[in-house]
Image (cartoon, rainbow over all chains, first blue to last red; front, side, top):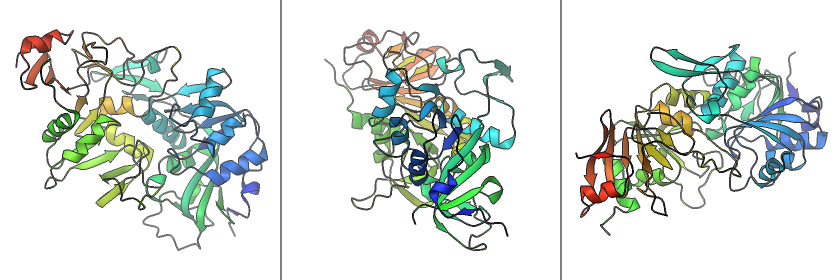
Amino acid sequence: MIDKTFETLQSAVADIFDGATVMIGGFGNAGMPSALIDALLDQGARELTVVNNNAGNGETGLAALIKARRVRKIICSFPRQADSHHFDALYRAGEIELELTPQGNLAERIRAAGAGIGGFFTPTGYGTDLAKGKETRLINGRNYVLESPIHADFALIKALHGDRWGNLVYRKTARNFGPIMAMAAKTTIAQVQQVVELGQLDPEVIVTPGIFVQRVVKEAA
Amino acid sequence: MSNRYTRDQMAARVAQDIPEGAYVNLGIGLPTKVANYLPTDREVFLHSENGLLGMGPAPAAGEEDEDLINAGKQPVTLLTGGAFFHHADSFAMMRGGHLDVCVLGAFQVSATGDLANWHTGAPDAIPAVGGAMDLALGAKQVFVMMEHQTKTGESKIVETCTYPLTAMACVSRIYTDMAVLDVTPKGLLVREMAPGLTFEELQAATVAPLLKG
C-alpha cells in the first residue's frame, strides 16, 4: 500500500542536507509552510539556497531561517519589504547572496524545471538591468531573453487537504507557488491542514496530482 | 500656481477609461485607488498577480482571511464568480497578453513610453522587482498614474529615463496631476489638462517635448 503520509514534521524534513536547494511556497504569509520551516530550523541544515517570492517577513517562517543564518543564497523577486529586516541586515553585510528575478520569470523558471524545459525565451526583462549578460533573440519582431529553469532538491509547500497518494487541494490565494514548486523539486513535502482518505478529494478539482508529491504531513498534531 | 488634479480626481479619471468587461491589474500604491471609482453598474475583472481574478474590496473589520490577499499583501475579498489559480498561470495571463489594462505607478516615463518604476538605482538600495516587469509589457494597454513632478519639482516625464528601466516602449497613456497624455509614434500628445493650466505652463513643467492635442 502506498502511503506518502509522515507521522511527524521532523521525520518529513530529516534528510534535507547542507547545501541543498529548497523551494519554499508562499506569497508573504499566504501559503507559507511555517510548520515545515520550523521543523527545518530545528533540523539544522545549513548553507541552503532558498527559492521563494520574498526574503522573509517579520520574525517567523523564512525570516527565522534567514536570521539563524541557514541560508547562503536566495532566489526571489521581492526581497525588500517593510518587515524584511533580517534579510536586509545580512544582505548589507554581504553575508547572503541574492539572485533577483522578475516574478513571472521566477514562476516560469520553476514551472519549466518541472515540465522538463531546458530554457525559454521571455519578453520580460528585455533591455533592463536584470537581463544583462543574458542571451537575447528577436522572434517575429519582438525581443526576448533566454531564461533557465530552476530545479530544487526539496520543495516545502502548504496545502489545505492531502491524501496518502499525495493529491493536493489548496485554499484561496495560498495556492500561489505551491503547484509549480511541487513539480520542480526531486522531493516535495506538503504540509496540510488535514489528511483525508483516498477518494475524498474530487478528482475533478485536485490541483496537484500525487505524482508531484513525495511526502504529506499534517501541519499540527 | 495653476490648479492640479487631486489623487482622487486622477483615480476617477483613469476609471473612466476602463470599459465594461475589461480584465485589469491595478498596481500597488496610487493605482489601487482606481477601484474605488469604477462605476458599480460596470462589470470589470480585477486581476491580482498572486493568483486571483474577480478581486473584490477590502473585507469588513474582523472578516479578514490570511489566505485571501492581494499583491500588496493586504486582505481582500473575492467577488461571486471569481477564481483562484497558481503563479505560473497568473503570469501567463500577464505575459501572454490576456489583460486589457494595467495601471502602474512610475518614477519616470520617457517620450517613447519607456517605464522606470522598480528601482532608484541608489547604491545602498536593496533591489526588489516583484511583478513590475511582467505587468509593464504584458497588458494590451499600460496606463501610468503618477505626479507630474517629483517633490523637488523635477519632471517625471523625460526624454530618456535615468532610473533603471522596467520595460521599453510599453506605456500607452500617462495620467498625472497636471494632464492626461498619450504616447504616440510622433511623441507625447496632450489630451487633457487640469483646469486653468495652459499648454505653455505644462510644457515648462515637462522636460520632454509635448504635442498639442
